[in-house]
Image (cartoon, rainbow, N blue to C red):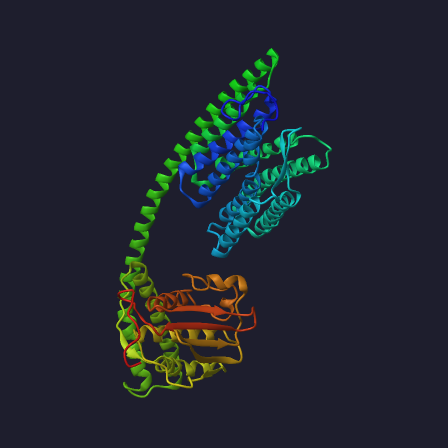
Amino acid sequence: MFCTDIPAPFLLIFSDSIPYLLYYSHIPTAIVALIIGFFVLFKNRLLESKILFSISFVFVVWVFLNLVVWVNIDSRLIMFTWSFFGILYVLIYLLSLYFVYVFIERRDVPFWGKLSGFLLMSAVIVFSLTRYNLESFNLTYCEASEGVIYTNLYYLFGFFIFLWILVYGIYKYFKEKTEFRSQILFLIIGIESFLFSFFLSGFLASYLVEQKIITDFGLEQYGLFGMTIFIGFLAYLIVKFRAFNIKVFAAQALIVALVILIASEYFFVESSTSIILVGVTLIMALGFGYVLIKSVKRDIEQLEILSGELVEANIQLKKLDKAKSEFISIASHQLRTPLTAIKGYTSLIIEGSYGKIEKTVKEALQKTYSANERLILLVEDLLNVSRIESGRMKYELADVRLEDLTRQSYDSLILNAKDLGLNLKINPPKNPLPFFHIDGGKVREVISNFIDNAVKYTEKGGVDVSFQQDTEAVRIVISDTGIGIPKEELPYLFKKFSRGKDTSRLNATGTGLGLFVGKNIIEAHGGKVWVESKGVGKGSQFYIQLPLKWVDPNANAEVGMKEGE
């Protein structure tokens, strides 16, 4: 029942017969891990904070049980405690993988991942209850005889997780293009240092004992120092990058951990010289910690001041932007009235309402009319931008058919396309489309704008307009054989004042507002617009999609399909 006549340890883990280096490798490391885990969890309730605390807690449990095995002489207690090592070992590695995924991806693991982890842990627990876990007890060395199959399996699993995290971390590091890649690098180095040292020391100790090369598992204790490395990298992530949204708490936790590590050296120092050196180091650490915490607090105070100034500046910028929008709105209204008058009178003169005019005068008036039309469109775009940004865009809803709106746009643009030597064609839908309860005028304006853009930026060939319908939406597809769009410009095409690099060669009058306005109008109706292009010189396809379940753009709430569609 008992291995020797040595008295039972105090509180299960404290005994004079055990080397103090054992306590130094176990207790300080466990305390530091628990402090960091608790501090991170206390500061916020992020998922990665909870997982980190779980890793720290499971690690501390493993350390405690390992000390129990080392210092106790009751074979029953040793066998019972030893039986949990495989379970805790697998759980540490699973939680580490979980932590790395959530930290990098910023989201939880999918359900299938959690289910796989649960099934694996269930299998490990069931397997631990069999004789394959612990085969017998060695009274000579007062330790359990591990089952080779069970032990090798969970060590193999730990090594597999180590490689998985390594490959995944390298992939994410090279894929990431922002400052976050530095955080990925430090995280992977830290946690892999812990996992590899934990695996290597445990596996070597079990293997060498099994081969009777060594008589105890003393080698295992050196693997625990990997946790200290991991904690160091975590502290750096917190101080440098404010990981886990922690500021001054991180510096405090780091200093506390450092002081505990240094003070714990008193467990095994024996000479007076060593005691003095440890004391001097401890004082220096306290001084360094005080300076660091003061520095961090000062930086935070300065950042808070700057943040307040930025908030105030942002408020002022919003006021200026609002004033700008109001000015554009007023100016646009004032401009639209004379431009409309110019358009009307010029049209009447061209049509001969004021008498017959010479051909040269008529040509000049037609150019004047076209230039005036461009100004009217520009003013209308500016007005729409002002209304969109101020939230004053209103929509007059009616039941209309998209093919009718498209035909109207076609009629207004076909002459211009023919003058440019281009073929503008509409492919009507095979079956009539349902009615849409929308602002027909504004949607027609969007369709016209998209077709006009396709004509403007096509040198030869033509523009085809077609329709697509499925169970949820109808799409108008405007395809051209024009200059195409580089892949890197596609995400910015619908931004305000955004124009392609090569567009000015064909059309110098564009403002970059038409697509922005069109996007907002269609999105207000619950739809969306997008563009596809295979590259420069390969044409483009613009899509205007409206849902069959329509959205009231004035109320911004889904209403449903119109009855009788």
